[in-house]
Image 1: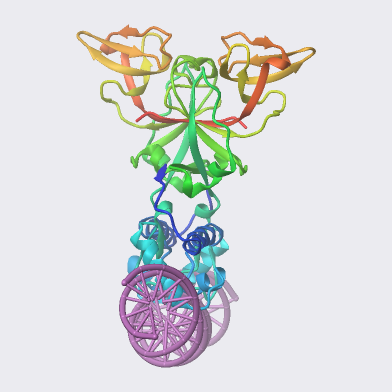
Image 2 (image 1 turned 180 degrees about the horizontal axis):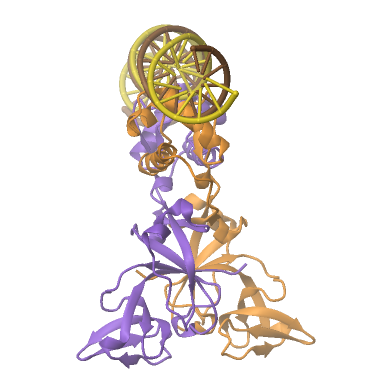
Length: 216
Length: 216
DNA sequence: GTCTTAACAGAACAAATGTTCGCTAAGGGG
DNA sequence: CCCCTTAGCGAACATTTGTTCTGTTAAGAC
């Protein structure tokens, strides 16, 4: 999600980077050397070559030699996409949907969420759930928010998980801490108290990877 | 952020789409016809051509004729990216940074956030702030969250805004409602009460577009 | 003045890439 | 049998594209 600022470029080199980026967004494939010649008002492919060498040296692009349109915009490719199926919803009073092999088939899902890969941290098997209701404010989560989950039934100490409380018959999102003889479930909202429960009472339903809220 | 499922493809066509997608992610540019031949274990460029025609007809790709590597993956390009500068932080006790023309220069910013465009709803002039501290739980916002903002000093009724309260000297994120003779500021956390204030006491510092939280 | 470096132009060549044509094979229907 | 459709193959040709070489210009330093 982050790209650091890079060394200052000449205005022509900046024009070229901007052109490459714009062309890639507009066309879905990179420009050829001659596209850059005409797009940046130059007269010769060798000027483009000269400047691309510098842009590569400074880390803006990677060139794939003898490959047509072989210009990789590094600030672009460092931020990849994940396709995440939205397989259902999460509400306090019901267990969350369990992913099955079918729900991993991206094209079969009726709703796909595309997010930048750093939200998933390159993890495999991430799926999304929509929050329904207002009963999860202890997790600082709101009705309509989208939660990115990774299916797993064991989490590390201190990780936020979707936890099914068997006795209470409800789902909660909290950080899980293992203590002697009990489990501490810590809300994201620090003003609220942790709850303690028997390890037998909980079922980890997945790890919470990220939360997305669109407001406007 | 959403892409609907598409018509079922033959397994070979699915292989080709998957290959294109993977190649694009790995290389930063689309595959050539011959890349697809060798990548999908086919024997002839005309088989690729035959199948690409179908994939185009079904809406999976757009082909740019007589353009080398002119394959545009539609499920890819339909979800665009926005580059959003992270220009500072938001904490309760201080006004938020005000964007200036300088801070819009993407390459000059030290930190860039790339998000899928639907998070910004195609809006211009979106910037990002990092939340510092835990004093904004009324907005269901946590320390470390990232808030996407759009600079404006007027918002529609019911929109969530960053509001500077002059007398209290603090920032708050709330929904703004105009009532006769006063302003109602409604927290996202419904369990908490609204506050009412004089229109002269508030300064709208921007509209809240989205909130992103990475947990794992 | 000369020399060096950076930046640019133009042309030619080599290689990559797209397109098209003719053909084959398999299956189904009349 | 023939015809049609679908799916695939191979080769040749045309076009796009990358690379390299030579030369020019401009600016700065000595």
